[in-house]
Image (cartoon, rainbow, N blue to C red; front, side, top):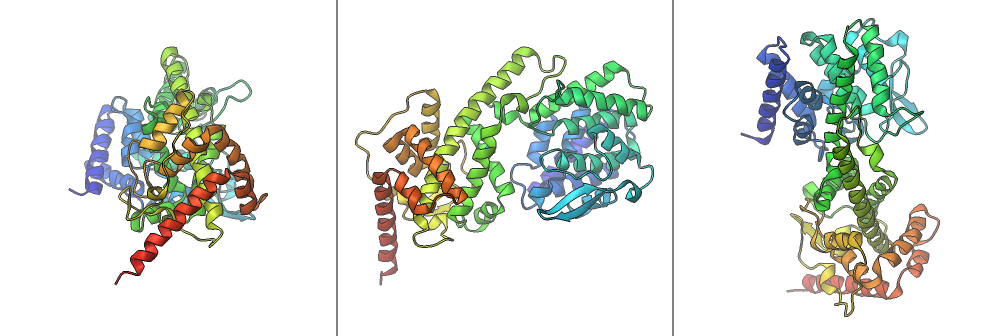
Length: 463
């Protein structure tokens, strides 16, 4: 059985189980087609993290509404897939259009006079999300979740009672990530208000207690969706972070699939820079949610504490790697603007360097600087020993960054990165940035590069 066939079977099994639990009258052939629709999208060429494994995990195995919602919650991921899957567009295009402005192509809900009349599934989805005709969608404010909810509602409407469909869409809405309390209302409070509106508008006759339970269920699923932020093992947390990188930096995915390490130094730096900036603004309170005792206070505080720890580790880890790549980028500009990382570091194959590699030409540090606190110790271990798993586009450990940290320490590295960010913005030339770096480290890395190139020259000259 192929991996896709296995995914189809797992997805079908979950659909069969959930629909039976909810006493929904639906034929097996229909569920088979739905499973194929979901898996085809979730196994697209750019999916690296948001895969069938992810939706199976997010749905859990205890609540049928959560299981169904999770299967659909990531079927549309516009910026990752570069489009809406052709088979999904059947459900989406009557309601959504592409619009052009000076920033490029965006998606928007069609104006009211362009929308199909009285489409219950779409009307329910817009009410749950609080969206309006003519509204421009943002990938950072529910675009993908909303489009996924439309697909879900249109697919399930034929055999799912409206009151159950409402609860499924509530779970999908709750997976819009990283939203703060606004005007004294949490995202869950605002969702509850919209569920009240939908209950009245569509005459669903759900009791207030049922609406509260629907929001609690959605919080439970949404917290699982971002559960990796609370992993007790930071190496596992960073694995997930590294799986996200190629989804929105497609050059890494291409290189990883066909010629590992063939992305340019700048392309790798841009990917790290975006992730470092993203981690920099996050706070645990916008990652995990709590509503009416779901989860209980002890569990919620545990999620926040572990997330805070992982964020601290991730920030220092990403900053360390970003400084290293800034240094390599500045040095590489001396001989080319499209230099691949493999050219100056060595080729990566199956998560390991093949052939000569830059680290082989680094000297031993006689008196290496040692970490001063728990965070530095954890980051040093991650740099030296590696994340939990290798990826096909990058090493799991960071030998050059380890060398730099042991040579200059984290404080000087962070100070150097502040200049590196000016270099990225074009506010400082590459040579001016290098002049602000530790000159001894510059010289050591330059010499190591020359020796790496000499080894290749010698190999080329073999008779």
